[in-house]
Image 1 (cartoon, rainbow, N blue to C red):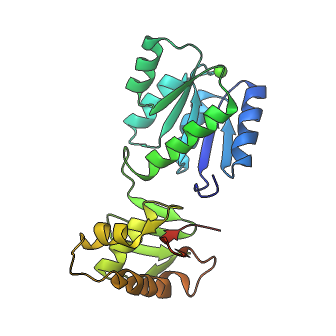
Image 2 (cartoon, protein in one colour):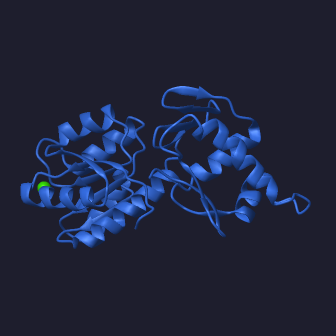
Length: 231
Ligand code: CA
């Protein structure tokens, strides 16, 4: 799993030993993990920070996980939520999904299973579900509403095609996109378009997005295509 993007996660779990074990495997996977052990703290923390995902236990002090999820959704927070439930009953699942959870995992679970679900959560936060307004890779940000790009806080001027190409790459961080996929996504696959138009635009993008910044984000994968990723 070299190429999955590191996520900033909120882990909400009051069972200390479990919380510590979960945090450790998530951090080993390269994720940055904030941990709280109480429902009200979880709510405050999730509203204060823009997380890529929340791992949320159901049975918590002060506010249970269902209530936390419900209030976050009511407040317009669309961060993907993986709910940890104690029992695998249909009723529990439905309650969790109704409350706004995206996925659930029944305790006890294997840590490998948890990691797989968190990866799925990451893909969800990058694609469907709560459609993000801002795509981020490292210190590069693309605001899809204002159509603005920024790197390390500096505004970058992009043409419409450059923006579309960068958006295509940033919607699939760490994933290699072939020239024909990029042609399809950005140029709507006009058969008359020469595939070197992709290389040309990648060159323009690099000049604007990578040349004056570190680390370099746009990668050429020889014989395959292009990818955007940190490190
Ligand atoms: Ca608990």
